[in-house]
Length: 409
Image (cartoon, rainbow, N blue to C red):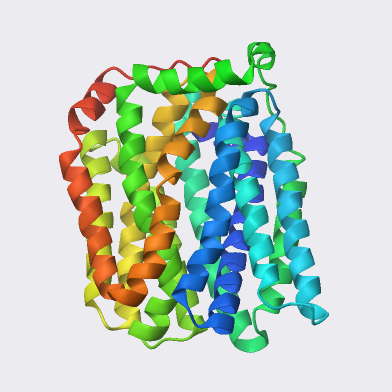
């Protein structure tokens, strides 16, 4: 199937639409939870504790469940994950509606999301190659990634509006409905079944094989290490976005929604440029420039005092981001055999996400003690320095010159 035939692939578009609804709901729920907690406590550290409750169980599940993903149908894993998220947000909404709320519903949904995410993300990445031919993966990933980011624009924007008018409770109900709708759409997707070889292997051998694969592919390992720096900065930003808008830019919930929507809006536009510009520029150049500009955007946020300038910076950062992430995902999907994809992607997520709880913890701590602007500038410089020092360029050039498509239909 050539890339131009994606439009005739109904299963691909079911994946796109199902995940788009999910991302819109997730971004809406994240803003609602963060705002409710910040409103109740007034502390960035409390928001950090919510994210720690998300990440620590997530990493534990990531370690033990990851290798089994190659035994299971990724579509079923995604559907069950979405229904679990929907139930959690529905319970949180019911508790708030009946006056039994407080902060515990926020922590409940954070915990459930943390337990589900290690299942959902590798399954979603494994499902796409089972419905799209290898030669169409770059365009498919760009289309999917751009659509998801565009959906994330609606979540924060709608969330900021709802919170400003009705409070955070209404956003919880919409989040539950979005996850339920996502699971329903994914149920109609047609995909190829998992391999019999993966079903016969033991956990320890599957996990060890996932680790060993990174020894055979040093490029993928280095990309994972570099992404761990990026995820550290993302963890910091998760905690400090709302305090940054309220305390540093003197904004409101609606302004916070606009700022959160800026990055995915830019990402959606940038993803449309990836297939075209990737044919003109070397992959190594555009991937490294993408990371350098992303790090610079953190420094720029530390310097501005206008919410509108901050939104513009986030849009520009979003435009540059897919030039790294789309090619990074395609590298994994084309260089990893399909029967190993679930376990390798799970180990990859473990590598890149292990630093996020540290970023969440330090974000809340340093944001209160050293100042939000200082922390933003530090995170940007960290990404820039890691990108410059980590020797990726030669490996990326080598990968571009001798691309190996090891997936089989």
